[in-house]
Image (cartoon, rainbow, N blue to C red; front, side, top):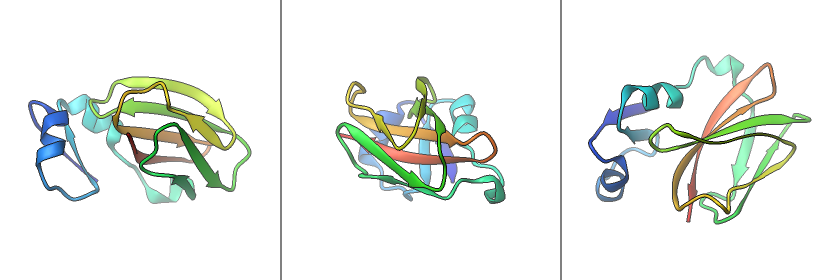
Length: 114
C-alpha cells in the first residue's frame, strides 16, 4: 500500500486513475494511519459488501473485534467493539479505512460508502 500527498484527496480520488492499493492523503499523519505492518500479525478476515450503504459484515475466525474507522484524511470517525458487523449508515459517502484488531493481530481494510 502506498500514500500520495495531495491538496484535496477527495477531489483527486474522483479524477485520478490510481492503483486500488494506493491512497491519496492530505498529510503524513494520515499516511501513518493507513500503513500496514508485518503480514504475520494480520487477521485473516473478509469485509463485505464493498461498496455498501449501511452495514458492513466481517467474516473470519475470531470472537470479538475492536474496530476503528478513519476517513480518507486519517480522522478517526468511529471506535467500537463488534462481533460480526458494523453500521456505517450515519457516515457520509466516501472512502473509509477500517482498522480491525482481536487484541493480538490487526488488519486494515478499505471500504467505500455510497
